[in-house]
Image (spheres, one colour):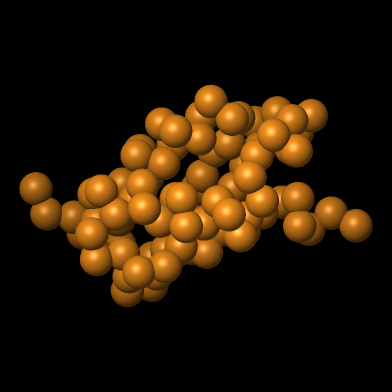
Length: 83
């Protein structure tokens, strides 16, 4: 099955991150760079989730299982947008 250039199967990452109360949404796929938004299902456990700079390489490796050519993942982390 071939994957459309605008699609990315997030399920490998979602399956792992679900236990930590994290959901990911694909915002944009620019060539082989994925831009994702992270949603915290339980804001009370925001500290339970890895910081973005550690999470991005983990998510990249998980997503490469379905798209080996993926080079980079950028995650918009709501914890970094709070005052």
